[in-house]
Image (tube, rainbow, N blue to C red; front, side, top):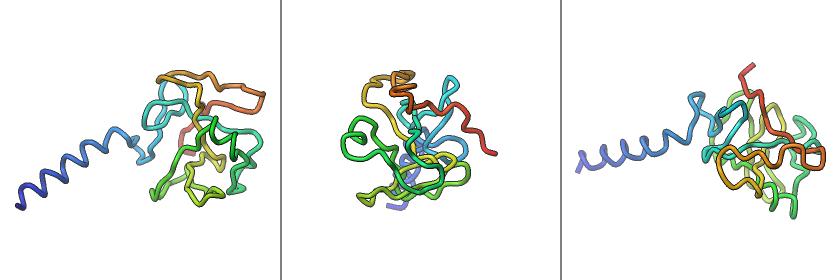
Length: 128
């Protein structure tokens, strides 16, 4: 029984490993931009005030620009979490909430960069 429990724990760790970057974040750099655990490009929104702890992208906006979920993971700078109006946790980078874009269909897509002049890919996610 003990062997099965250890094996199950080991398997869970192996499966979770690729979802986390080497710094413990569920985000990583790929081809010069920040991506989520699925490899999808991550964006910031100019209407979000840095370090305000709040997202300006709600309702229809959030359907088109899904927030990057934070779950219960404790983040280290430059990453943090904000609490959305619905109580869910969203990842932030340098205080700016992070989003993906519904029109990005595969890894490497950056179709949201520059949309409306207010959406931007995160290109410098190095720890400071």
